[in-house]
View (cartoon, rainbow, N blue to C red):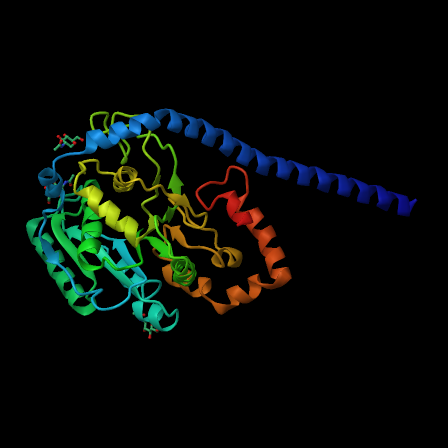
Length: 385
Ligand SMILES: *[C@@H]1O[C@H](CO)[C@@H](O)[C@H](O)[C@H]1NC(C)=O
Ligand SMILES: *[C@@H]1O[C@H](CO)[C@@H](O)[C@H](O)[C@H]1NC(C)=O
Ligand SMILES: *[C@@H]1O[C@H](CO)[C@@H](O)[C@H](O)[C@H]1NC(C)=O
């Protein structure tokens, strides 16, 4: 009797387990199916609208004198010889604002530590902070406070020598000016860098993973390279209360050309040069910088490629199997030191390698990335990458 009872229980347990497995598999597939449907609808409308994209190029093209007005601002801080007489694997621009001193300090002592990258990772990476002048915030800055902030920046720059600042108000709606500043500076002072990257100052970059990936790509003689989290067929936001609101006068079409999330993306040197040239003839008044980047790239005939371990708005799950592959993760300020420590620990490689390590990571990543309705992190495909 007792044995039978146990057997039934075991049977039921097995049934329950199988049901759960099937259900979760279904949910995983549904997410992909759902995603697929959405992507198809988008890509069809994208194809349908493809003709209009030439329209975009035409309507954004302006005379060069007028295009140059977006880059006329004088330099307040500059380091023109940063790249001189040396091979540079990566020129990394961090978009920052005058008041974000703490973020810059944290980056310099973690993933942006050039001497660590040179001595431990064996690569020459230039980390440069790009900013505008202390500008109007919603509360409004008084002139004397702006002057104090500027003095503080001058001192910070004297110590670190890594700020590039131009004289435009550092505001959200001037981000496109900051983008132009980067590509113009790269063209003028670091045209030989193999790669150029743009990152927000609250992004975590897994420098060891990124460097080994870029070294591998560079070895292949990479060209026409633009990677990050890709937004395909993203529609302009017409809700006036949104930070990303774009009026129909500014952008009348219903979809943007493909672009990578501004939080962090990498282009090869040849693409950086093409973007620079595009900025010499396009109207940069659209203030969403990553969208403007998409417009420039489209007009230069460059298309972005997805890398699943570049995050857009999202934050990576804290897990050893994720650290093994992550490139960027968004939204790290307080935890940047801790994350740098655990994500670059040699234990990560130990625990994720070998047959058992890989098996464990496959399961862990499935559980972390393929949860249905769990967005804002790396996509489920990351579990299979
Ligand atoms: C950068 O890394 C080096 C080790 O290569 C270390 O000695 C130095 O203290 C680090 N710099 C900062 C600011 O943490
Ligand atoms: C952008 O910067 C310019 C130059 O400082 C300034 O006049 C303008 O108001 C800024 N635009 C926005 C939207 O903040
Ligand atoms: C650039 O676009 C804006 C609207 O987005 C428009 O007001 C402006 O006149 C355009 N500039 C030129 C030079 O056509």
